[in-house]
Length: 288
Image (cartoon, rainbow, N blue to C red; front, side, top):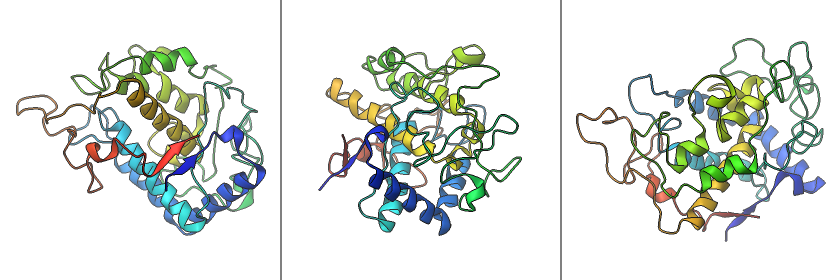
């Protein structure tokens, strides 16, 4: 029977406690840091050689869908009632709104060093020490809204611009694709500064701190953010009935994307699954 992923702002006090407790236990067991390492390993950009699966590629959505499922399964091994809630950043747009409450993810980082001082993931609790992808300190950092260089979260109209595109992805299948639902949602734009980040990417920048870069999984909001991104794929599929993951076939030899992206029926590393197998998850979960 399919379980339910709920809006973070609708969670009861008991649901928040169970989610936090399960997340902290996965961290205590050492499993959480494996997720951080995996995301770092698969954060391959256009400018690098080899296969791209997690970002700047058509498989951005199925890769993170499977990644979320793996984390969710780890949480449910601790507490079978727990699912990953989603953060609707078009609705909850203030730094004090859900999920930035002391009983869920805690709040913003302090001005001096962006260190998160409140909530269950504050370093002072002793339960959330960063060990993977650490560049400066071993504590969680955030810079919600970027006080020194303000940035706004994406709006409903920004999201609608992605959902309205009826084609999943288009050549050249990377960060420079100007059409296609995938990149409109992933959010690689042109130019510099805020105009270069849309939807998914802009949210990472808005949160700031450790959410900027390959080690972004170190902030638990990563999962709530990506659950909402996954919900958009779910909604897009229902709006554009019959539209499928693209490309259907691998790029031919001689193409700049030859052996660099995953086609619909090809295996999606590091798992033994294909994008095709992840298009329909209605038997596993649904969204409230």
